[in-house]
Amino acid sequence: MSDNYKNLADITRKDFPMFIDIDAKKDNFIYLDHAATSQKPQTVIKSLEEYYHYYNANVHRGAHQLSAKATEAFEDSRNITSVFINANSSNEVIFTRNATEAINLVARSWGDDQIEKGDEILISLMEHHSNIVPWQLLAQRKKCIIKFININKDGTLDINDLRSKINNKTKLVSIVHISNTLGSCNPIEEIAEISHKYGSLLLVDACQSLAHQKIDVKQLNIDFLAGSSHKICGPTGVGFLWAREEILNNMPPFLGGGEMIQDVFLEKSTWSELPHKFEAGTPPIAEAIGMGAAVKYIQSIGLDHIQKWEHELTKYLFEGLKRIESVKILGPSPKIQINRGALATFIVNDIHANDIAELLNNNNIFIRSGHHCCQPLHRHYSVNASARASLSFTTTFTEIDSFLEELISSIKFLKNYI
Ligand SMILES: Cc1ncc(COP(=O)(O)O)c(C=O)c1O
Image 1 (cartoon, rainbow, N blue to C red):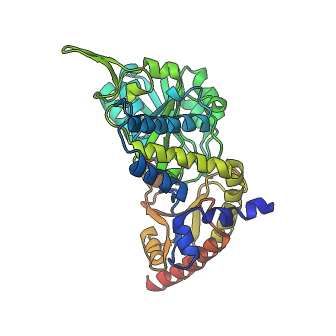
Image 2: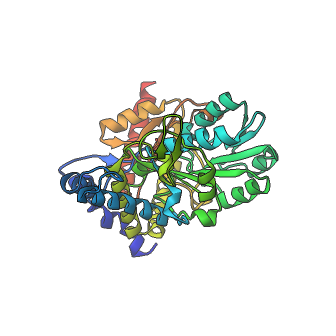
Image 3: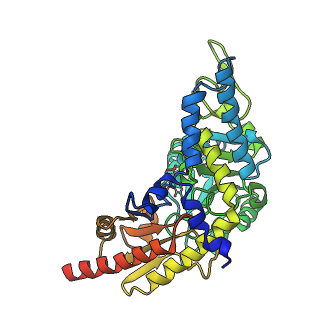
């Protein structure tokens, strides 16, 4: 590990008002719930404040200077996002409320238009509910079939099962890049090759990967990608769908209203060009501008640095958890899958995850417990809840030490209690 990586938390914590307060002992807690939502650096907070203070106006509407300035900043953010994922053009980036809405957009617009009775959609057992329920709703509307790809014992995707389930009726494979529960990183390029061989499109849920490793939609050779700003140090209330331009051009609008039209007559309407065709109504302007600031911030640190630093932290976290006898970690070890997510989800023999999280909370250590919006996955493991500690480039080894120490005392306490 070079010094660069050693110091990444030290370098970045001073960019976040929350961590500045913690490190100055004005506040006292350890946040290990970055996979649920990331903390926001000053530069993102400042971008929101500047918009509301200096140039608050609607976009693509008025001819006045404020509207022009707001439109420029808003469209800049689209451009920044499109460069971030190496899209062909910023027309391919549609702002949505979050990743969930991006997936629903595909299910409603592309799905309702392209899917017919008996067609198949392939998803995996490790999907977040936001990549399950929209397809179930589509299946109710169109009578298509959803198939689930299994996972291996170590929590990685069973590619052989994918190969055995895909066929010429498969119209879409929709898969998470990094699982928010198992941390497994799925081999997207390989999945793209298999999917396209059968004429299927591929959607990637990049919620847990965008802030942790470089994403290049051209290199991955995918068709759709969904992301949420709040997972990448940006504000809540905005996310995006990326799709290849020819696919978007052929998709009907999702929501109707202002801004997405070209002409409205009494009996019919015609649609705007991309990306506006999919952005009905006043968009989340400040939030989109904030997402652009967040992407710029992440780029300034460098995703290579982030990935290496988080890998060291994750290895350390796993080593500590493995030393605790009653703990069982779900998902592949970072020693075996080096690009896995920076999180560890675990269950403790005879103890409910909520009790662990509550005791840790009493000691100002914040982790997540529950099913993490992955109920089918939890059923697969025959548990209804697990505990998850998730990290970021701002996480320190000391924070992990404190977490492990408190986890051990919590388990001891709860074992005596039962
Ligand atoms: C893997 C994954 N997919 C989708 C989502 C949904 O994100 P959002 O609630 O921002 O739409 C999440 C959020 O936790 C996630 O972790």
